[in-house]
Length: 313
Image 1: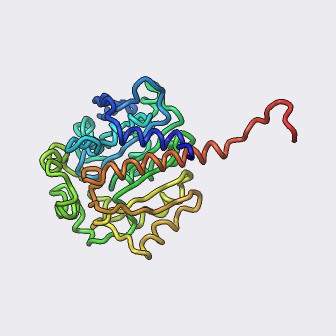
Image 2: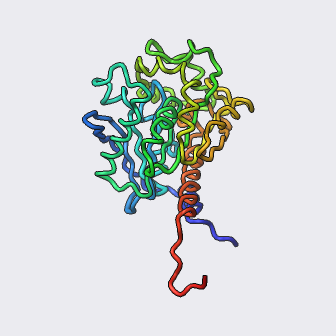
Image 3: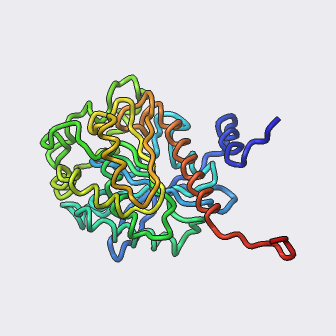
């Protein structure tokens, strides 16, 4: 009988046994004087393999990645059980930084803020092999904008709920006066546990003015940002994604600008735009961790190997 890899064994164990729940706590990151609120989960009794940095979408908060509707749906809890540190950050203009940035922050200005925040985190916590960005919707824009700034500390990007071609008219996008068409965020209600909507009310936050104003320009901004990325990238579209096109032509436009990085596009069945709040959250999060492991394997395989003393040439 073939032996399972360490990662497969860890995932199998996590899905078949009831492990002690990792502690999830609120922390503050300091980005050159700007406070950013965040949620943190760390593996118990072992050093982290890497840090999953989770960036929420527009009109949400970091708790998007910590669904409490049912056990097993939280990325923070799952990631910590599988040996990673998970850091879900309130992006600039949300949480603690909202008082300092009531209008939000332009996309091009968010990259140095995230870099400074993660530098502060690195000074205080073990980061293992480095940072892996997991981003949803507008958070994916922030992740792509920050990829170049993070340099060799970045392992890869995993982005859901974001494309490069809109499936709606620009005026239908979420703005400071509202969150856009409510059903487009969710899709069919059957895709979510009953408590997801009640608990989700605590996650909703106003979309900052600058962020909303930049939204319609994303298809023009995107190619230049994608061309700068030099680490593996995975995009995931939910079965009922309604904000972005993901037909064959749109996917070709999405992947074409990545001239210096491998990129793939996956689809998540039985899910709406807010994948991490639905029944499919655990499935999606396991795939996120699987992609991280692929990135780590590819990085290790690319490192020069030292030949043992006396080995034949």
